[in-house]
Length: 265
Image 1 (cartoon, rainbow, N blue to C red):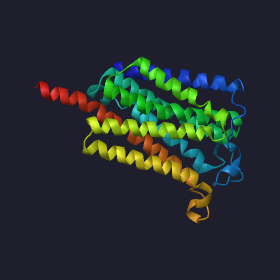
Image 2 (image 1 turned 120 degrees about the vertical axis):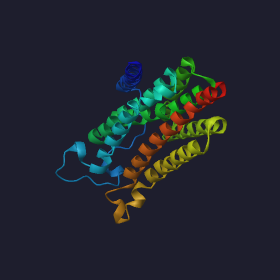
Image 3 (image 1 turned 45 degrees about the vertical axis):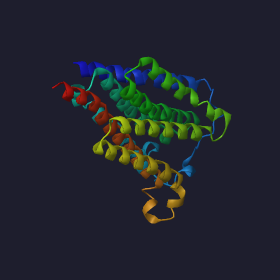
C-alpha cells in the first residue's frame, strides 16, 4: 500500500512539473530558442509510406525503451523493504520521469514542431538534476526544500537557451557534470566495488549518449549506421545510463542504512 501511495505521489510530481513546462512553452516565451527541426537533422532517413508516428522507425521506437525501463523501476518494490519512504519517493520520481520522457521525445519526432522540440530539450534538464537531488539525500538526508531548490534552478537554467544559440547545450553540460560529481561524492563515501561498476557503466553510457549524438551524420557514411544511426545508439546509451544510474543510486542508498543495522547487531 505504501509503495502504491509513493508511486502516485511521484507520478503527480512529474505530471505537475510537465504541465508547468508545457504551459510556459505554450505562452511563446521560448519561441526564439534555437532547435533542430526537420528530418534533415537526423541521419536516419524517413521510410516512404510509413505514418509520421514511425517515419523514422528506429529513432521513434527506441522511445518505448524509456517507458519500459521507467515502468520496471517504478514497480521495483523491493526498494521499499531496504530503504525509507523518502528514498522510495525519490526513486519513483526518477522512474516516472523516464515514463514521461519517452512520449515527449516521440512526439517531437512525430510532429517536428518547434514547441515540441523546446519541451523535449527542457524536460532533459530536471532528469539530470534529479541525480544531485538523490545524491544530496544519501549524503545529508532528505530535504524537500533542497529538492525543490535544485529542481527549480534546473528548470530556470533553460533560460540560457534564450541568451545564446548554444545555451541549452551549455546548461545540459553543467547538469551532466553536476550529476557525475554528485555520483563521485556518493561513491567515495558510501560505495564499494559493486557500486563502482554500476557508476562506471553509467558514465560510459553517458559518454556514448553524447558522442553518438554528435557523430550522427558522420557515422552515416558507414552502411551499419545508416539505419541504426548515431542518434539511435545515442538513445540506447541514454536508456542505459538512466538504468545504471538507478542501479547505482538504489544500491548505494541502501548501504548507509545497512551499515547501521549491522553495527547494532
